[in-house]
Image 1 (cartoon, rainbow, N blue to C red):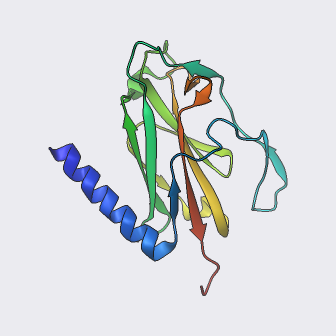
Image 2 (spheres, one colour):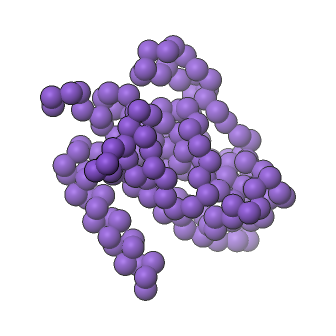
Image 3 (spheres, rainbow, N blue to C red):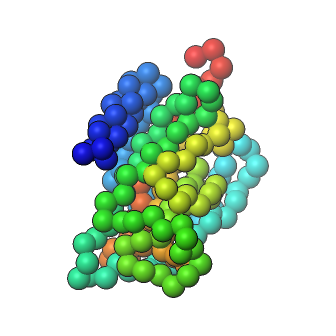
Length: 169
């Protein structure tokens, strides 16, 4: 029951944030697993190769994991990312051990560049991590060996577009 209450609160906060801060959520983005390896960074630093891990197929006889995530402004600065996996367990103590079905950690990317490993449902994203204008914040589910969990070769991921306004907008 407590989990459900947190989900409702998180979803409500996200709706308010999307309304106030023009954040769009697209968990079924068509780029799932098809990121280009050379991403132009909005920061003007040129092309940079995206960080990628090999895919690892989810066992067909098990429930298939999925993920979505919410991104909303933190009043103290930056953004809070709430990761909402289904049929997946975060196992930070098992990092770098043999993969176990439907468990592991997440990776978070901004505009195709990996920022961090994530070992739980929450991550604080520094405002400096985002460029002015439109940004893509992507979360992937990863096995203990860092490979990306996939279904039929498609990485299990979620993408949210975050708009960072120009000053005085």
